Image (cartoon, rainbow, N blue to C red):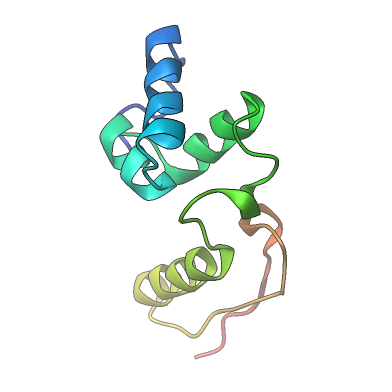
Length: 100
């Protein structure tokens, strides 16, 4: 969990986000690290502020990489094989089985 998880966005932080994304052309992972927030919170803020039209258009973001990373975390956590349904969003991904 990130340090700033659940904290409200300030105007200053939002302006910093805009500068880092639009002017400096940082990707969402770099910005998340700088802001000590999750990549998803950066994506939500970019979209709500109108800097991106959807998550797929965000610089450096790849849903397939995120899903692969989450599957690996699940495998390590459960020491099992975990399969996910195909989905455009990780929020909608559902485990199909946890067979060993």
